[in-house]
Structures are given as structure tokens and as C-alpha cells.
Length: 160
Image 1 (spheres, rainbow, N blue to C red):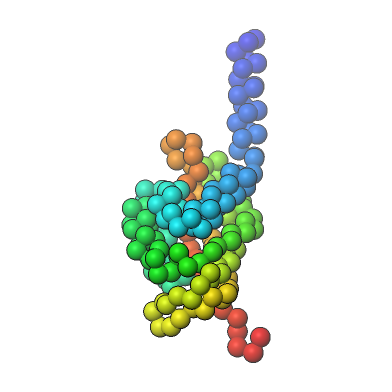
Image 2 (image 1 turned 90 degrees about the horizontal axis):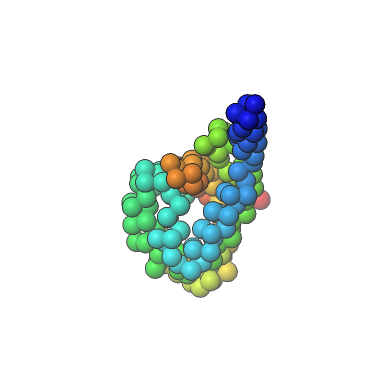
């Protein structure tokens, strides 16, 4: 009887944990990334990516693997991240399986000072908006990691 009771408890716990929305865990990851970006700590910012993660940035550049993502973000930190402040707004998430979920995030990037980018200057106070789709997987350590991320720049159509 005790064995049957334990099996029922375990089954109920499994059902509840599968049905739980991962939103809060994913929100905390995104909030920490915002903090890390604003501290210009690209190693910490990138630490939530899985070893084999893929990131496609808003310029269409394809970065593969956590170490490459860390390297690429660190490379552009001085010119393009340090003079900015980011705000991530967690829009929604959906569980795909017990070990996979996706989230949509709105990024608002504000220039804290003037800075140069290839092809021009970004003026202090300039605000750009991007939307991010992130795919999360639970690692074998039962920890959520970003497996894939794509960032899309929002461009207002002419005349609007």
C-alpha cells in the first residue's frame, strides 16, 4: 500500500511540474542578463547560453557556441555595449516539453553617450527597439539554458 501511495505522489508531482509555466524561471534569467549587460559583464551575460547555443544578432551575424558568443560580445563591448543601457521586457513564454520552452522579449536599448558604429554615429538618447525569440532547454543539471536566440531590429516604415 505504501508503494502505491508513493507512486501516486510521484505521478502527481510529475504532472504538476510538467504543467508549470517556466515563465518565472525564464524571467529571472532575462532579468539577470539585463543586469549583466548594464554592468558590461559579457561573460556573465553569456553564461546562460548552452555550450552549443546559437545566437543570430540583429545584424544577421551567426554565433555558435557559448565561448564564441562570449568572445563576440566581449569584442563589441567597448564600442557598442558599454555606451548603452538595455531594458528587457519579458512578453510571454510557452512550455514546449518538460525540458524545453520559448520566450519572447522586447529589448529597448538607449544610448548613454554618443558612440560610433560602422557606417555612422549613434547620438546620446537614441532609443532602438528589438524583439528577441529565445529557446530554452533544461540542462542535465536541471537548469534552464538558452539554446537558441534570434534578435530582430524594429524599423519603423517610412512615413510613420
